[in-house]
Amino acid sequence: MIQHVLRPTLLSLAAITFIVVSIAAVPVSSADDTAEVTMTGQVVCTACWGEQEDRIAHPYGTDGDMKCAARCSKRDITQSIAVWSNGKAELVILERGAFEMKDKDFLAYVAREVEIRGTVRTDGGKRFLKVNALRVVAERPAPKS
Image (tube, rainbow, N blue to C red; front, side, top):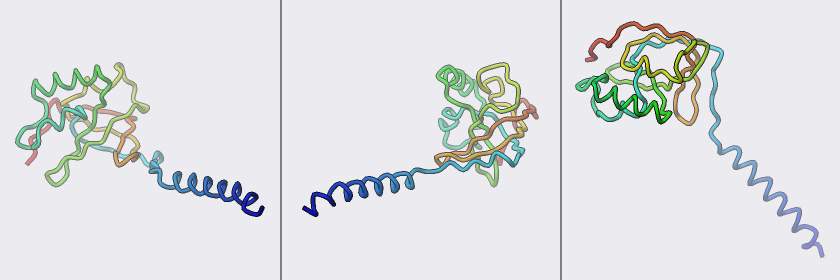
């Protein structure tokens, strides 16, 4: 008799425990949308960047890179800013912010060196930059060493 009464209660507790543990295991995005940062780097196609293993020896911006970026833009693949530090580039994915855009994405800025002001958030191990202001610094970035 007691088993019949306790069984639904134990099942309910097990279900609640499972839900709580599942929620706790979901990665939480850390949004720091309050602090504005300024990043300077090259706008690149997030997917095409990886076609060359060594971007110092093979700088981004070739005709092939530009064609790849145009194809990816049609497929709604995002652009990023490649920010160099200590001989390595980090890609930060660009998102719409307060910066007024004429196009659906940042394709018009691909291969250009830009200075972007915005807010950074991290989600799923990736960094995103909400673009609030964008200024072209150079048509092609200076070579990295």
